[in-house]
Amino acid sequence: MAGNLEGKTIVVVDDDPDIVTAITASLADSGATIRTAGDGAAASKITDESDPDLLILDIMLPGKSGFLVLEKLRRTKPRGSKPRVIIITGNEGRRHRQYADALGVDAYLTKPFRMERLVELTEKLLAG
Image (cartoon, rainbow, N blue to C red; front, side, top):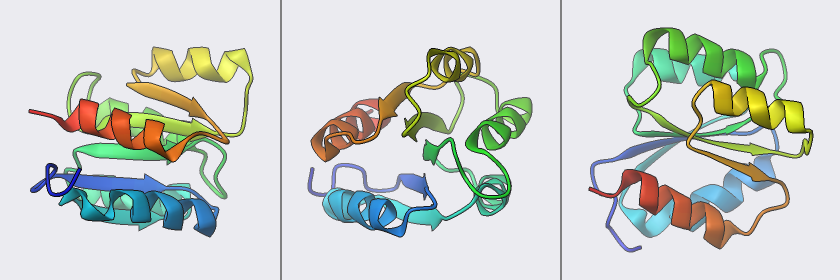
C-alpha cells in the first residue's frame, strides 16, 4: 500500500485505543493523513471542520453513538459524497446492519475482523 493514498484523509473513530492503534498502524504507510477520535462528539467535530475522504466508524461509542454521527453527517453530506464510510462494530444484530445500509455506508465489518480486509476496503473505496 506504500503511499498510494497520498493526499487522502481518513478519520478513525473507536473508543478502544487498541483498535485505533492497530488501524492507524495498518494504514501508516498508505500516505494518507490519519485523524482519530475516541467518541461520537469528537468524530462529529472532525467531520464538521474538515472534509475527510473516509470515515472508519464504530457504532457503539460513548456519549454519541456512531449512528448519530452518521445521521448528522448524512444531513449535510449525502450518500455517494465524501466521506465514504466503513462501519466497524462488535454488534452482530441484523437491524444495525440494515440501518447502516439505509444510511448509505460503503462497508460493514463485524469485530473481530481481519485488518487486511479493512486495508483492502480502504484502498478500494479511495482508489482513483
